[in-house]
Length: 160
Ligand code: SME
Image (cartoon, rainbow, N blue to C red; front, top):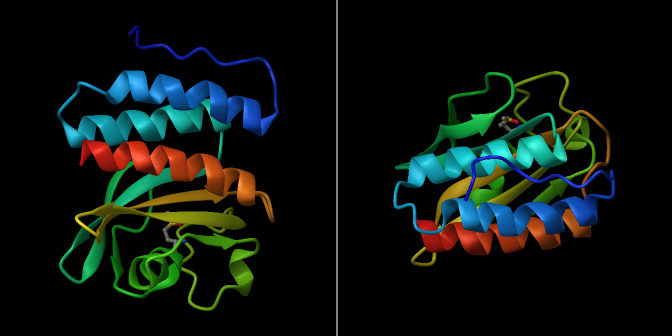
């Protein structure tokens, strides 16, 4: 496909997810390079949804290491169980944080980040990557984001 995204002229997040997900699938299916795919997934989400920070962390031993992302520079390494990302890895669950200041142990890579959603990406039943999305708006994520980002993760799991 052409390397430009078709973005509907709407601020309706459901419509934006429904527009971008098939385009992400088309962009990444058939490409075997994981880093290239995760980079394009981050870029497509950022371009269409416009969140403050979108990116992936890779599980490497006992820590997470920063992978492809879009947004300001971020923490490079996160220990197992630490922060929202480390907690999602340890607890193997999606975590939505409406107010990062109220999350014990939240790692503030930027003071502009106000709310966050973190989703584990699995390989052979183990967490292999973490998708982290930060918003500069309080309480910006809900079950709609969880639903569509889970679909995205299912696709990403076929790539890794
Ligand atoms: N806030 C995350 C750290 C990663 S940055 O937000 C990009 C956390 O608490 O794990």
